[in-house]
Image 1 (cartoon, rainbow, N blue to C red):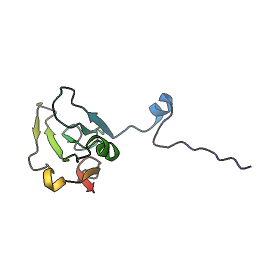
Image 2 (image 1 turned 135 degrees about the horizontal axis):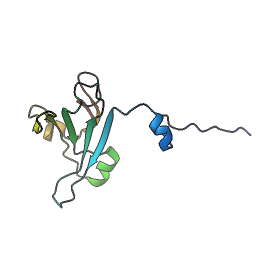
Image 3 (image 1 turned 135 degrees about the vertical axis):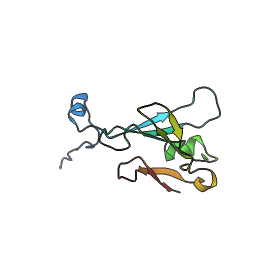
Image 4 (image 1 turned 180 degrees about the vertical axis):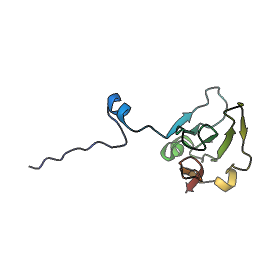
Length: 131
């Protein structure tokens, strides 16, 4: 009888010790939720954690699409997906919505955010959508 050896997913660290020895994360994906009873969908935000990145601390992206399988369950009529970007001023404070970056409505209908890439190559800028 042959024995199959199990190899853990290399992107997941099974212990805190292994995680602290791993390379630093460059992105964080943060689920955001509305708890005030407002009829607003939940969202997924991307945070740049790489201090070497030109966009570090300067941009915030978010979408109301959490995850395809959940979206279909939670929003059977469709999400009416959208994605937005805000420019942040880390030195003086404040955030300004980038009105030129806002795929939404019929342009985005039936699509979901699949992967996010920045023009400079780090993974938090352009969005690739699929149906």
